[in-house]
Amino acid sequence: MSSAPFRLLSRPLGQPSRLLPWSLPVLLLAWFATHHLDMSVARWLFHWEGDAWSLKRSLLLEHGLHRGGRLLSQAAWASVFVATLLHWRSPESRAWTRPAARLLLSVFASVACVAALKAVTQMDCPWDLAGLGGDRAFIGLFETRPASLGPAACFPAAHAAGGYAWVALYFFFLHTAPRWRHAGLAIGLLAGAVFGLTQQLRGAHFLSHDVASLAVCWTIACAIEAVGARRAAEVHA
Image (cartoon, rainbow, N blue to C red; front, side, top):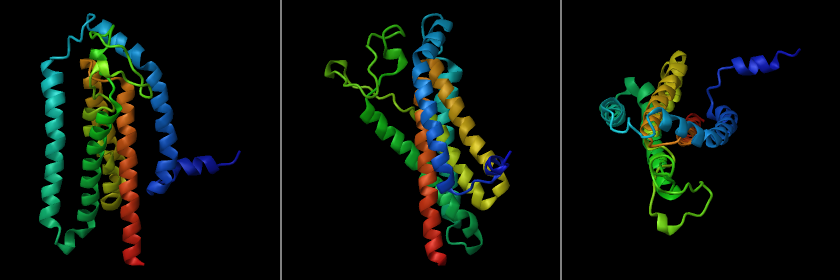
């Protein structure tokens, strides 16, 4: 048996041109799979909590992981921004300030893009839907939303995006400390998963909302890295 597939899997995929084509189909399939599980998972959580989103006002979930998690992500971004700004003109720091600038742009653009999509897609949260504590009928992503239902803004998941946006740490560490690149990726995935589960337990989002946020964040991280790599190659050409 040829060992080519195993060599491919073990190769350090650092270039976004390699990562994006392989990862996007996987994320797309994951979204379709979780989309079909949305109602089943949400109903199970709803019944588990006593046929009410009893954790919606949980001190740990609402104040600790939701509001506190958002502040933590914002504080991390601000800290990286200040550090990059202070060292931007230092030739000795150029090896990490340029990757840090791309990291900052990627995190900001990911969160902003998800926020913009929420306003366009007009999808309800689980707690708004009939059978899950609300009174609205479920309207799918590609279905026409009746004006009588009023506005909605729950897809993709903004809070999960605040964690998943940090998957861009993969590329930051790829340039500054390559052996830590997978740890950087894990930080973003773990933060997004925790933030996403927090909101699912509160009835604020479906599982597929979180997967969609991950897809947006990873695509933006790869795109910004690709543009940065191209510009760096042109400078050194």
